[in-house]
Amino acid sequence: MICRMWRGWTTPQNADAYEAYLRDELFPRLSRELSDQGYRGFHILRLPRGDEVQFVTLVWFTSIDVVRAFAGDDYERAYISETAAKLLSEYADRCDHFELKGTSWAVPAYGAC
Image (cartoon, rainbow, N blue to C red):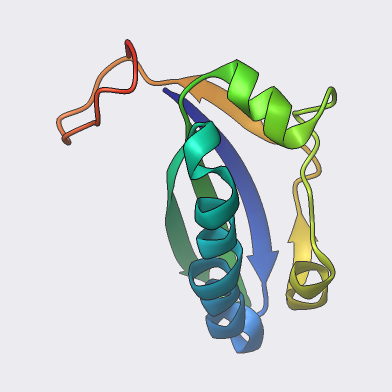
């Protein structure tokens, strides 16, 4: 399993709208379009800190090849939609990709971890 991790920041005023966009629009679309190709789900982490709110998204795929098929040759580049760009005040332009090596949570058997 591969985790595509990304960070972005909003103002406190935009935080609820950004979270709703991720939860109700972006990730359901990925699920509809990519589940049969190796997309396995997401986590959204939210951290309010002073005059900004940091978000970390963890997006799960069965392999790095699936990530490349989804994101293209420059798969580490972050894709920021117009909706997200309007809500974010700052964001990382690159994503990190981690290989899952252990967990105490149940992980579907989609290949070796």
